Amino acid sequence: MADAKLQELIDVLRKQGVESGEESARQIVASAEKEAERILAQARTEAEAVVTKAQSEADNLKKRLESSLEIAASQFVTNLKSQVEESLLVLPLRQKLDENLADESLLKGLIAKLVENYSAGSPEDDMKIILGKDAGESLKSYVLGLGAKVKLSQDLESYGARYGLVVELGSGKVRVDFTDEAFLALFLRFLSPAFREMFRNVKVGKAAQQ
Image 1 (cartoon, rainbow, N blue to C red):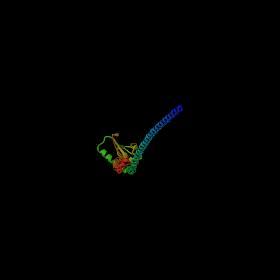
Image 2: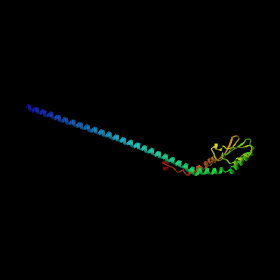
Image 3: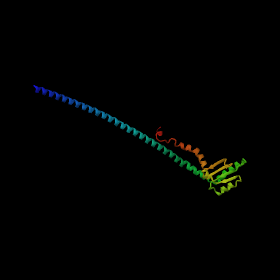
Image 4: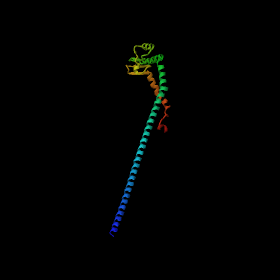
């Protein structure tokens, strides 16, 4: 009888132990599954953040590259316009001016007209005619033969010019510029806007899409 009760007690304890072990195992498995889900969720969140950051950086890089390319293209077009203007307008115009202002007969006629108009006003001050250092002897002799009140100077280059002449009245109080640079600036003032108008519709980047 005692053996039977002892065996019954052992069976009860064994059953309780087994059930307790199974419950602990179930709790461990549930906890592991919950932790695994948490880790996977965190991994997904971090992965999405990495992808979003990479996409944002890629978009920013693309925008910077597009902006740099647009700026470079705009500068190229601007430089091209300047080179075309220089080649097709400035250089031919400068060449023509140099040819004409190197013509001594033209300069003599211009000087004669200036002296005539100046003398008509009975001037009190001297007139100084400034020529280039390469002025011919004929032109220099012509200026020196205009009278005591007409002085000759040959430092036209100091005015940033090579051809033509500068006339000063009253010790430099009045200056009239007939140099190649003065005429070039005058002509370009009127010709350049019309010339550049031909390029007005040449645009690049976003401006070209509007």
